[in-house]
Image (tube, rainbow, N blue to C red; front, side, top):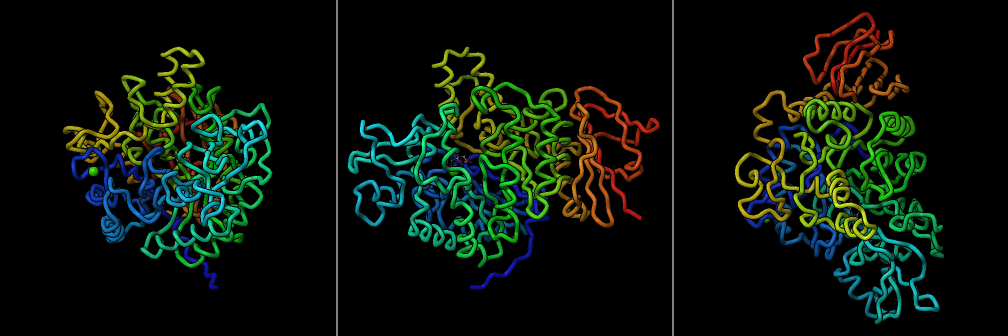
Length: 562
Ligand code: GLC
Ligand code: CA
């Protein structure tokens, strides 16, 4: 078998994530679709992104918005047909971009043919495709694992007098990766999409594939919704499975891979991403997403601390030297970064630009989630009943039961619900912001986005133009791609500063997280570069060694070393 190493084009790429349901509707049914995406490719090409990642568009009952796949080989009719998909792929390539799909193989939908067969009996071709266990002697579930979206992670099926495992909704049964037939079927399906010409996969909850085979109880003190991590994250055969996948699939194509890796630290990440090991190109890590968690996990009103953010970002930058980082502030599971890490009111534009600078100048592949390039904020849902996301609904029920005040529940949903990022993309200020002529599938009464793409295109100071600029700097200066990272102010409570350096070039990146002006002293050995980017009109306000940084100011200096 050939095992050629391909070019590492993903190292100098910027990825743009499209949430297909909410990007652009083309036929007035209120649901974004593939023809809608095709019509917006010029916008994306102009922005300068290299790769488009689509959230799942396969046939699905949408219990978890497509992360429950009923048919791996077909496009859901809400989005279009397989021919629409082929047209999209061709058009993306014509517009000089690449396309990656979401790969969801920890679990399927319960509507998937494999599961429909599997649940019928203990002796059919698919009986061992899922994780079935006998009840305990008292009839209860095999162990104490909880699931992300329900209480127990086990669901009983009378036909088999057994329970099946689902780490997510009960409509999302976990596949049994121990079964070689499962793995073969998955690899075959992956080759099918690569043979159609796609350029890679974003791999859903990939760190959960290998479960401890004795399915031990998790310690009682772990939170129920995530206690399954104990027996299923970074499990015993995880790397073996991925290396097999690499041999069977990835090694044959020039593609990129990014794995979503819950409960995985930077040391474990090296195992996934070290190119010598032939597994994945990069991971989505969660350490920076956990900095503002509270007693209900993500749904909290705690604010992150800059010192923590700097510590975890630096840890990942320092650790993944042979491996590679993916860089992100948000995605379809996270709220809007300007609300979470910036100032969504007074300094919305400045802080959105600053956050973009901090991330895009780091080492790794940056991901932009749709609307982030406009500096969109979280969304005011008038009523808790308007949320549609399964995770949000679950937490609302749980908090109500725990007797939390309505105002508190509203507040944490505003701050953290996944629906904040799933609202229709605002293209202009016409009806439904140009997203649809019908009624949007996620209909937020009085939705009034802070801006829209058309206004941003016309405003030369918009976040959009700044992002365009950020992307172009990556193409212009090699050091943005390959420079090594070094944090130079590990103890400042307002400012995050770091350098990037290769043999001939150096970048100095300075980002303020303060709502006030602050004096900042650039270390003397780092002074004197050329200012190549700033989110204010900076005219080198030097005060001796000090510069005055305005609220959320970001500045990037560049110099060639002698
Ligand atoms: C990932 C997806 C999320 C989904 C979950 C289960 O975390 O990003 O949207 O709910 O996996 O598939
Ligand atoms: Ca549609």
